[in-house]
Length: 300
Image (cartoon, rainbow, N blue to C red; front, side, top):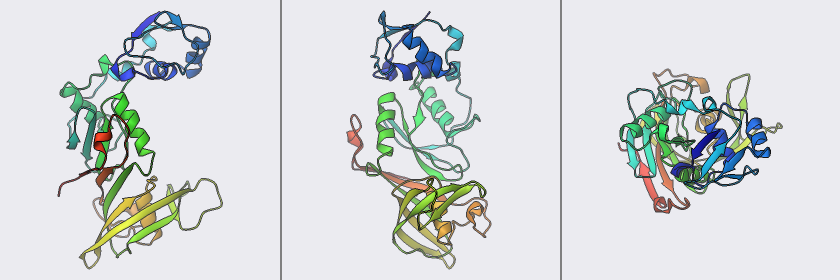
């Protein structure tokens, strides 16, 4: 029998999700079977329903599993250098400027996620050994080659609230900067985007394709500033936020990002410039209402 105590960052989590996170190497089918067989008790009362919400301080007893099945990966924070810059931080939220050529998450040690965990661990704000199931995590992602704003939730309530907000196109506004070789007219660019497996990239079209994989993609070109004869700075507001939306859209306009070889740029560059430059919170729910109507942007 294993006994676990519900902590702050597990408060109001569904019991089945808590168990699946805590025992993430155990098949979900086995977790559900233990629930049906009344092998899971909360405060000594057998619970069969996985949607039961646990409360801070609850004692969860698990029969039929042993300690070796617990998620031990949570104890590992790699010794890596923190290369991001902090844009904004309080007790709930961390907004960082991700450097280019750094993945947000993945199977390697040096990711933005791990850098954030190292940063918070060193400041004694996060210790995975003291958590049952919660992990600090990003709420939005940008490409490896892009730089700019990524938002993190420091606790479960914040993470849930921000994840919900990022799913609502009206709750958060995001602006990007990038370089192209030709001017682009201001205004909305509407179309559809889908993944093309043979080309291994996202394809933007102005008319809806026949297959069902295509999703609506809406982008606003806010401004276009001439830098040199063959270089223009675009300020772009994302409305829908699909994968590689800006890159695919500009390729469809026959004006790809300078240096973005994958999306048909003919100009070589050490890397292409695409920056998540500014974010505005419009209608984020409790307890993060204090963020609403606030802008956060990169300096310089």
